[in-house]
Length: 473
Image 1 (cartoon, rainbow, N blue to C red):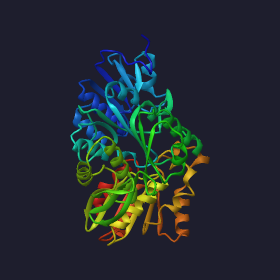
Image 2: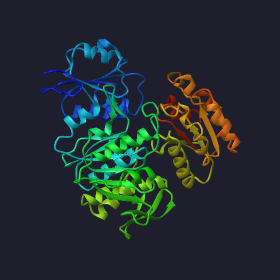
Image 3: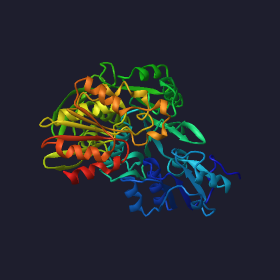
């Protein structure tokens, strides 16, 4: 039989993963290890928490991409979507004619057989929503399998192998691999899916909003009449896309006519209290440690799916109350001299705005100091240059780092942190530009005061700024 991206041979024992330290690839590596395979991977510039997860699992991670790493000892190579066609290991893999596949193909083949998939898709909120749904299923005794793009604090991992009938998957709209430029979520066949939001993102692979919309259109079009789509009612693009679909549609949000609606809600730190309405009537009064209205919408969608699976309101309510959240999502990294340091994954302008809005309602005693590193392929491009200035109104003090990987972006497309700072100052916001992480730490040592919250936002390691700042304070 010929090798290639659609062929996974029988009797696989040795598996190699190129770019193993991505959150999804790291989860897959650990899952394969649990299944009894011999697993090795490679990556460069690795950082926690995935690097620690792999280390604790005893999975060797080879430094860098070296063609000598790839040998005929491997029965299968899984290629991460960060890997380009000219990657030296990918080139050697093809040269040796080794069987290879993408991450979603491996998930389907090794973990998905016989499972009913619950897929969470959308520009924002996928990780938190997936994590909460997985925790509800586990708490109710359904023993789920899951693969999620963040570490669940309740489990300490971003994957789990369960014997139950359901598999929770974070459905990413990013491309699958260099040999498959379609979105990852097109590889999954959901029994139920959640659609949280649709906005322009991933400017390196999507040309415009219409291209993003088309990807989600294809995802919904692939859902059968036997499946259920739980769709957010405050997104105009979602509203248009869900019309006249064969699958069952359940809307959630704040519209009076939606099947699931967020009722009154209030904060009583450390709790958020909220009412859930189903078909116009009170379904339950719940409490959660999650912060912000956007997280209540995430909870609402997970509750809706759990309800369709027959999980009782008391079981769901208990799980929502005991859900500890996800690492790098509003995660408190420490407190020194009365100064709290929080880590968050926010990078899209909408995510930055909603995260700041959420924490401001909880941390009222001191100032909110926002520290932002533009690092994604979208945030380092100027596509959001005019949007970011509107995202920091919830902050009292703003620190913007120069993008660390700007050399990867064509000069005419580059985002300007200096321009963002100038625009923020024009809006009356106390904003500062910094060339590197060290300069930010030096500034915060003297600028931060007791009872301040330092909210650090990045989708990367940010030079370990959290621990370094806490040590310096």
